[in-house]
Length: 591
Image (cartoon, rainbow, N blue to C red; front, side, top):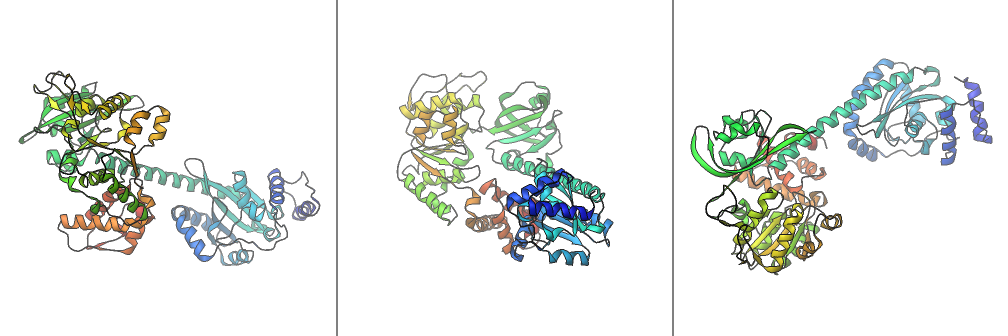
């Protein structure tokens, strides 16, 4: 290490005459050159660029999780050096000081040079220094006294180490500073393991949060299925079901999880399922243990793989109605929805509703575009129910939720004996059932190219032919399609036919994600809370302002559907008559 007096002379040679001596550490030489290029004044005696108290509070709130994770390890590090004149500092990835621990006297001396919470100590702002040079190098760095570029820092020695997330991106810096005479070359050896320990804590938190998000997404996704769903492991043990399945068999999830599938169903097929190597589609009369009721269903089984290893099966169970086979539940109780039922006063929603009302006055095809959970199905029903076809059928066709090899029969129907093992009498397809009314083609972007060809022909010729038949059946159907994909891009990729896109995209209507209409979130939340409170017979529910504020800050990747799910869960968890932060999931309550 260069003696203090010599280091001062080397610094003066550089800042006054531009002379850079090779005896200076390589990383310091490079940092000085960068500092000069940034135009930093080496003679300043105190820092600049300090946040106002309100700006600092906002930054600390934004970095709340980072600070709370780091603080116990900072306190442990400080306990080792307490009373020896050191400061322990946490900075963000830009070099902004966001949390400081230290003895009273060094904190006072640091404040005199604006080395305090809210100050920026990047190289661009303060030249070579422990924090800024650590960020610039991306490596643990120790800067001694006159190795600092500005005079304000010359009494100090700083030891800094980067903190990275699981992706390897720098999210902050841990720094320990002390007056030059108190510092030691081994000080950096204390800082580095503390920074690594913070990294591990952050990565564990990321993993935990990732698992929680995955579980919630799985739950939200499975509850959007129109069919009953069961996931079993390789032994036949039930590890997940959805609400539709629970409704079909009249059991709650806690009565199903962990049970063997044959503890619930007594059909022979369920005993064989775990060992069946291939996927299957089979109509059965579903029989439950200790229950005489039998339900006619279509059972579908698909094997789940992980790294080419079988880890379980996804079973879907779809009720088959006698009078109107394959009718989606949305065509029943929910088809009374109108635009008056769509909650929202934001400019974007008002524009979308106005476009929807205009579409209802015409008979042209409509394409609803929006992320999953933005209410495309509700808009489709509203358009139908304000059109001249409102007294005719509204038939939902879930293009992404029906197995590819069954989609044709569901759309177009089939004649007697078209498939081995089918019922003796043929069946109408959904386009026939929608005659005179509206067909809602949900998730149209998931339709295979083969089916797109057939759909295009139907749109052009206004008639269908059942599978296994020859007779042309004329139909009068208004099409409303919906997608969460960018069909322009899908056309360019060759995944969607351009001519079909032009047929469907006559009246495009964009539905905004929830994060773009934050002002509507309290209205939507109040609407759902009131609806569920009435349905469940709950008394008047008071909602704390912080509850709505938190909802407005969240990003809502699952949009309105996720909001409904979160609010339903919150109502279940609440113990009194007031909805507060404590009933929200961890992801929201930490905002």
